[in-house]
Amino acid sequence: MGRLFWKFFLCIFLAQLAATVGIGGAVWLKNRNQQSQQVSLDTSPPAEMAINAAASTLEFGGVKALHRMLENMERHRVYAVDEQGHEILGRMVNPQMLQESRARLKDQVRRAVRQVGGDDGKRYLLFLPSGERERGLDDNRQLLANLGGGTQMAMKAASVLQDSLDDRRDDRRDNFKRNDERGARPPQNQMPGRPPGLDGNNNAGNAAAPGAQGGPGAPGTMPALDGAQNNDNRAPFPGPGPDGASPMPGMMGPGGMPDGRDMNGDRPWGPRFQPLGPWVPIAAATLASLLFSVLLAWYFSRPIRALREAFDAAANGDLSPRFADATGKAGNELNDLGRDFDIMTARLRNLIDGQTRLLHDVSHELRSPLARLQAAIGLAHQSPEKINASLERIERESVRMDKLVGELLTLARLEAGAIKASQEQIAMADLLEQIADDARYEAASQQRTVVQEGEADVQVIGQSDLLGRAIENVVRNAIKHSPEGGEVQLQVRSLPEASQLVIRVLDRGPGVAPSDLETIFQPFFRSSNAGTEGHGLGLAIAQHVIEAHGGSIKATNRAGGGLCVEMILPVKR
Image 1: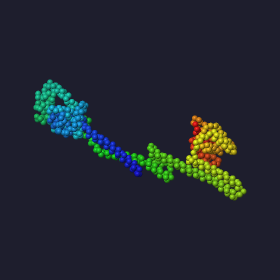
Image 2: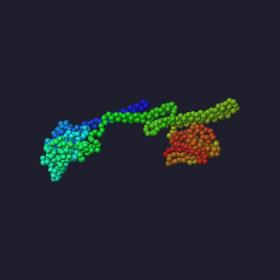
Image 3: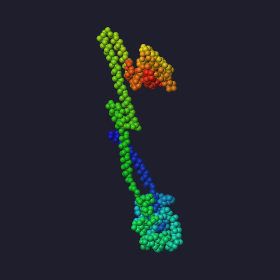
């Protein structure tokens, strides 16, 4: 891992850590502010059952029974607040909690708050704060075993009559009347509409309950309210029956269901899972930030490392493509930068190879005339009578060398871009006519003919001497390779719709191999079919000049033999 990797890693990790701390802190402060300003009540089914039990206890057993019930409750300890704001157990009550509880009295669907009148003439507001639920209610049977009969009756009524005790009171009165008509009249000292045992004298209720050992009483009577009163030995409700049997049929178990499960089908109430501490998400976020920082730092540093290796290789003279092979697929700017570097090194490699090849070819081309010059000078020294022939030979070779050097300079300037076509208007009809006249004169001395076909009264923007030299090189090359008595055709055609001028030079020479059709435009190229002398620079110069004028050049073999060189130039509109 280099320094660049660690720089990327630290920057990314610190940025992620700062973002995590900032966002997490903002969310934490917001939640803390909401928790400090909002007092929520417990509206779960267990809370409703506890509130219904407290309401039934207050309604049927009175304030003292409710006080005893709440004192013995370890969990789900319901708050009972009178109209003056005093809680029955003397606990402090938040005013916001009271306000929210009074507002929830209108909710008829989820009866999480009840208001019941007591035997002291006051109306009590019953509710359960959400904080009380965390302590849960493990087992109601232990609580009921410690409570009086009035509380047992209250829990029984809360289990069976949870929806609306006020509405069910009339139903019980009707049941009492029907039972009385059947012959099982309740005791006279029992208050109408109230369960037996709540009017202060339990003797009547016990007298009407012949099954004192736990069996059911006479039809139409209610069970005794307090098994501890009047020597009533019946087992307290809702404990298990004999031999560990389940509670009586139809009665709720400790979880609110007959089998002891809660309303959701789970086992007795209580916290289902322990909340995670604040350090667990912090540690998880830190580990995730570390992992992503390592991956991102590696992702960014890998192509840069490969690019550095490619630079080192190029500095040592190795210009082969390296970055593309090291990074694989494209898709980002770093990989594109590496591929651009490969393109640059490829062009440098081509230029260096071309310069090396050009130097080799120039050395080879200059060696032959220099050798002939030395031979002519030696012959002049040995045979003074042949000095005139030797001087003619020396002159001929010096002219050839001068021509070669001039072409090399022109080619070098064209490749380097030192010679640029000037922006002048060239009348192509006049230029082509002049080239054709010069070519006819040269071809006539070699028993060949030049024929011009077509005219083009168009203008091309460029430099006339360079463009004329390029076209002349192609025509002279065709004359040189044509057989004796052959014909060279100079065809000119204008394409107005495309604003182009097409110039074709055709000969009946030996042509070139198909594999050499692109290579003939390279410097010092000589086809294997060519049997003439030359330096191989004419077509190379022509290609550079035509392309400098915005055109193109290509070569194709003719069907009956020979070569066709086609040049296309843009014309002025």
